[in-house]
Amino acid sequence: MAGKLASQEKLPSKRSLARNLGISTITVENAYDQLISEGLVYSQEKRGYYVNDWQDLPNIHPRPEVDHHICLPQEEHFTFNFSEQQSPSDLFPFSIMNRMMHDTILNCQADLLKPPLGGGVAALREAIASHLASFRGMAIDPKQIIVGAGTEYLYGLLIQLLGRDKIYCIENPGYKKLRQIYIKQGVDCRLAGIDDQGLMVEELNKNQAQIAHLNPTHHFPTGITMPVSRRYQLLAWANQAEGRYIIEDDYDSEFRFHGKPLPTLQSIDASAKVIYLNTFSKSLAPTIRISYMVLPAQLANQFYRDLSFYSCTVSTFEQYSLAQFIREGYFEKHINRMRRLYSKKREKVRRLIRDQFSPDQCQIIEGETGLHLLLKFQTALSDQKVKDRLLKKGIGIKSVSDYDMSPLVRSRQLFLLNDAAVDLSMLKQALEIVKRELFSSVKLS
Image (cartoon, rainbow, N blue to C red; front, side, top):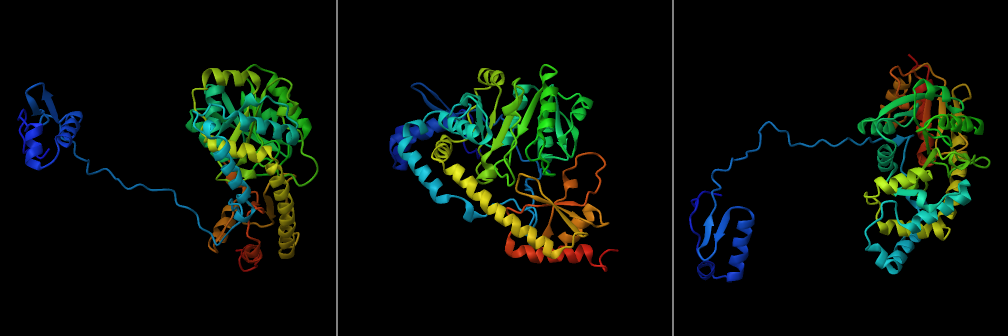
């Protein structure tokens, strides 16, 4: 490439070059073969090796104006974060999960080396089906379950399964990332308003929706639990036209602190119109990227016919380990333990808030399910001004209006507190700062 050898120039024979360099002919032969594979040299039988006409190839120089600096999203750092998502590490069953993984390596060696099936390994799907039957009253065939690495991946599969030509409706306020995923996938995604019972059927009709994506058990971010009457209205809507489906996202449903859980839409659906979604990211840890969906039989058949060429995105090692964790009852024990701990922690959080604020300053709003509370601050400040003022003091906080995707966002003075993840040792000081910044007479101007 330096131009020291001319095109068509003959190269030394293998024996000659090996002798001159003091190396074996095999080494020279391997070097010549590499040059041939790169197109720099060619050989002629019984004549030898020659330099190729590489000078005529265009030179490719890097464009000087290209910026090679890659900018990663900046992580937010707060002294105290009301919307903290990371679970305390001392609550994760590391020792038990370690044993499950060890058993998997010992007992599933042949299965671990098999190519992953599109829907997930049978052992995990059977374990999930058994869990859903006992915990959510869902009678399903394990073959209806499709396992994937996170719900975002499953959303992509659903779009391919249901079609990009459909009109999808999501709740507003709601999960902004869901809307971003649908839009990036080329889907017509529209916003459906909610009332104090959740998604309104008239909003679906107004938007001419064919697919409704909702969180009936624990709406995010308001925490609303949809009553059974509204659930039957939605099922009736889905049954009124061909091609209509409901995507039921049941995240956080394991953490219900009052009474028995309401039946899932899937469990009361007599017309096979509900697609059920859930994840282990909330119940175990955000870094465990194992989610699943339960498809109606006709969609499951369509998946295996049209999309089973996709390999499962969760490693078989993780699937077998989690299957044993569920099958041996450790998942249920973990959920029960977390529910007790979070319930006690929530009571401590409520007490700290009530000790700090008077009822005319802050109202606590909590749903029947889920791992966050809403704080209603009685202030004339806009939501953005509240956040800006607290940010200057190192406090991060999210408002319900942050999840409002309509063109004109109104302030609601409703703010999220993830009481399951907050550090109790710092919460009292953080609440004192909030009170001082929002309710001090000097600060109200």
